Image 1 (spheres, rainbow, N blue to C red):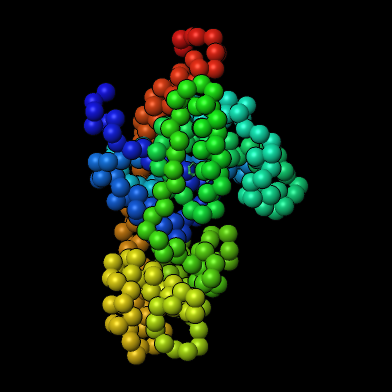
Image 2 (image 1 turned 60 degrees about the horizontal axis):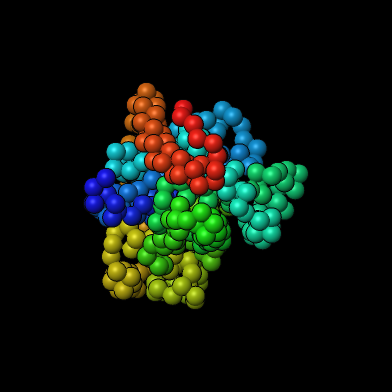
Length: 339
Ligand code: TRP
């Protein structure tokens, strides 16, 4: 292995194949990932975590379709399957396998404390399955399999990442330096896109349709949703997250897309009405997302190409995973074998 490769940091993140990715995912995650792919300091791995999705009931045909669609959307956003590894979790069995092994190093009490588990258990009271409970262990396996240094995640996944770190440290203390202890990689502060209808909450696809913009929304829907975005009644365009969350969110979106500073934007719109601001945001978002949408359709129209990408990238991931797995097997004392 060359020195250069050794020094590179590994970035790993997972996204559920839940169908819709929003403007929040685009600005907060995907767009930044595209920038990282040309940075020689990083090796980036992005995984569609279909196994995690199974913790709630899925329609098989829809799940199958959504995994492929999510990969197509990654690529449509500009992620290059040669510069990054883009693949489906279930195609690399080492995830499940390491998940089991790490489960033997995770305490019930730790999992019981996970706020997402408590949350989901109360939402799906009729299906509190063991997978829902051990979800964070599988997530730890995802991360630790690749010697991940940095994990881009939102606030809601921080507790899970903390657990992954604890498991890694615990394992290393017992068996020597096997796992890299990962850290959160939080992008530029203040780049959180808020709901259009309740601008004090994060934009989320699980809320009502008018509250979010999907990356694949049609231009007319984007414009309609932005026109309806909640603002306030004082009619002044000014950046003030606390006092004017709706207007500030629109300014944030515009600034994130055009790269203009907030002050410059506020000055540009001084004395204008909210309608002008909303139209400007709509223009910018539509211009940004239209090419993504057309590339997405092109990719989806070429299933054999997508399948080939999935196959190749899963192979690349599996190769990396195997290195970790053989180390782990050895350390744990599992009898040696060759496949
Ligand atoms: N739990 C994450 C979420 O819901 C998805 C995920 C699974 C993930 N494995 C991961 C994120 C590994 C980062 C790293 O959003």
